[in-house]
Amino acid sequence: MAEKGNTIVGSSPMELIKSSSSNDDEYGSNGMRTAETMLRILPMALCVVALIIMLKDSQSNEYGSLSYSDLGAFRYLVHANGICAGYSLLSAVVAAVPRPSTMPRAWTFFVLDQVLTYVILAAGSVSTEVVYLAYKGDEDVTWSATCGSFGGFCRKATASVALTFIVVLCYAGLSLISSYRLFSKYEAPPVSAYSNKATIETPPVFHG
Image (cartoon, rainbow, N blue to C red; front, side, top):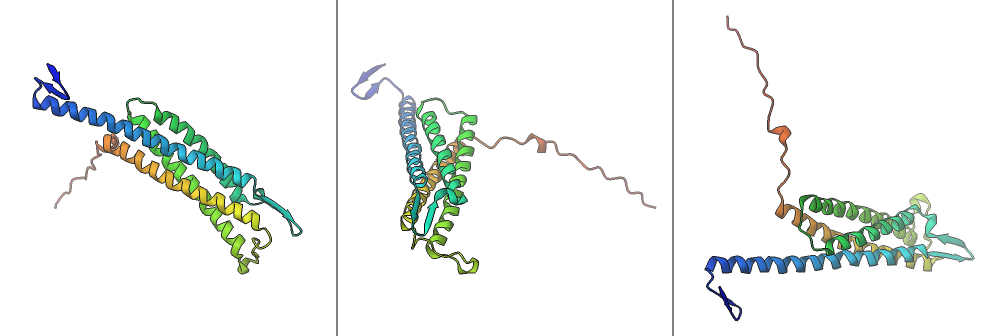
């Protein structure tokens, strides 16, 4: 079998089709792996920036002092961003290494991506509520607006929360990718417990 230019001479049409499809799959998998790796690195950088902004979020003036550590929602935001940054770095390294896809690996990515998506979403949601109350206040619970006196604190908190929601979007995309990879290649595990259904025997009915 000889080659002439880009055309393989002496090959059957089926061999040409298989060769072309295998090359397309290889290039497609490489492109998907690169895109996934970049998408996992991006939230790591955003989480670190959001974490640093919130850690430095404190202000003191004639009205008193206010820090992120005074609010439980902001402390949770810092912890969630730290966890997501670590997971993003680890998962990016694993995704960048070319290796055959297996069911345990696909399930691990799927479950962890889903869990981290909800963790960071919850952190952004509760922090958004606190920022809203800081700007608007709540007369029903006698919570006065504090951003008029602590404007710098509120601006940094808003920036950190905004970055966190960009991370949420990134993780939503990662969840879609890991879901597609899992359910497009592997079927749901068989439930053998339901294969052998127990039969209920009814007692005979005697007619008089």
